[in-house]
Length: 221
Ligand code: DX5
Ligand code: ZN
Image (cartoon, rainbow, N blue to C red):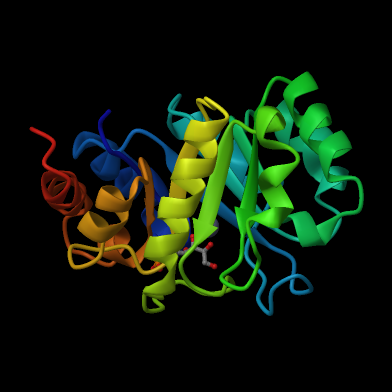
């Protein structure tokens, strides 16, 4: 297994989005993370379908869309049409979680659930076979640039054990405060996919930043 970096364009300079994304990919980023915020589920607004469309014109890499919105089901059709690859939502944001996971897969996307720092594993236990990805939040979502909450490391370990018990091939992603100082802890705990906003796009050279993160997971680059 090798580490996968999913840089978050929330921290990118949108005035030169193409250049920023191309630099991150040149450094070895496999996915591009898109943080959608609605000002209700989280206290901040970001972007939605137009950003997915713009990124689709820039790259054919998987677009890893993270919806921090209420009623994520309203966006399944549209985001599939725009070319989203992974569609991850928070289970507290909708009522019929299993139905929405199935709808995401029916539209040809990979289905993910995100767990906030205070949200227990119980929210995913009944739907493990319906999941292509579990996203562990290592900050309270809403803003880039926050510090990694150390409690996330043990939670990653517990999710890894849960996925292994079910022989699930789902990706285990961690999001928030990932950087050179924190990525190895999350990797050693069993995460395989790492969102990084500030640590990639806050650096002068996103390619070098991605390479450094991969090196911390002992992946030859
Ligand atoms: C947090 C978002 C994250 C965020 C990560 O609300 O879900 O994806 O952009 O940013 P950094 O890596 O700066 O913590
Ligand atoms: Zn995110």
